[in-house]
Image (cartoon, rainbow, N blue to C red; front, side, top):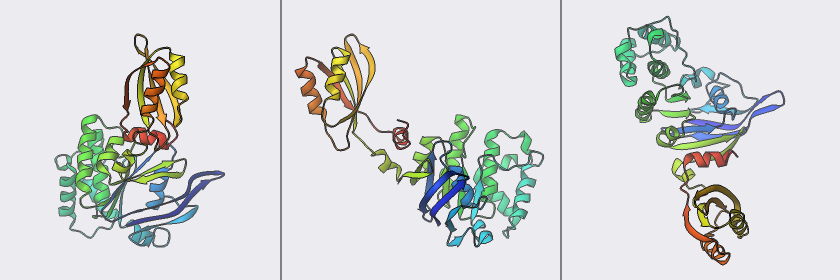
Length: 309
C-alpha cells in the first residue's frame, strides 16, 4: 500500500534521512520508533506530501506522491502531532469544514455521524472545540483524518499529552481502526507500539536500525544478558567475570546483601557462558549465589538498537 524507496532528506550539510526504504502492505499496521530527531515526523510529512524529499520516491497505492499528489493524498488521512483543529468552531461544524476541504462525495450527515460514532465523540458534536478535553481533541483529530474513508491512516504521536485513561481509550480506538485501515503511526510509548503494530521500524540517526515484528524484535539478543550475584570482594568478582571468554561487558550493580555484589554480564551473541561463570567463580573462592538471564523488553531492544543501552 505504501512504498518508500531510498528516501533522503537533507538540510544543508545535515542528512535527516539517509536512503531509507520500507513497505507497508495493505491492512498492515507499521510503527515508527526512534529518538527525537531520528526522522519519524520527517518520513510522515514526506509520505503525506507536506515535505519534498531530497532524493527517493514515495508511492501510495501505486501513485507517486510527487507525480500524482492529489490522487495519492486522497488515499491518506493524516493526524499530525498537534491536531489541526480550530478552537472557535464546534465539533460538528469543524468536521463539515474538513468534509468540504476534502471534496468528499459520501453522504455528508451520515458519513460524519458514522465517523463520530467510530471515534466516540458523538456526545460532544455540539460543543466548541476550545471546551474539549485533550483526549476528546485527540479523538477529533483522528476523526478528521477518517473523513472520506481513506485507505491509509497516518498518526504522528496519537497519544502525546494524554493521561493514562485517555491513552487506553485512544489505543483501543486504534485497535478498532486497524481492522479496516492500513496504518502508520509513531509513538514514544513502547507498549503502545508493541500491542498495536504488526511491524516496527526502528530509526536511528536517519537510518533503519531494525525492521521486524514485535515478537522477533523481542528475541533480539535474547539470553545474552545475565544477572549474577556472587559473594566475595567486588574487584575480584569483576576481574573473574571480565576474563571469561565470550563476555562482552561487565557492569557492577552494587552490593545487594552483606558481602555480595550483583553484576550485569553481557555475553557475545550465541555464547552460553553460564557454566564457565560458575566454574571460575568457584575456583577463585567467590560463591555464586544466583545467575539468571534477563528477559528482553522492547525498551531494552530499542535502547540497544539506538546505542543508548
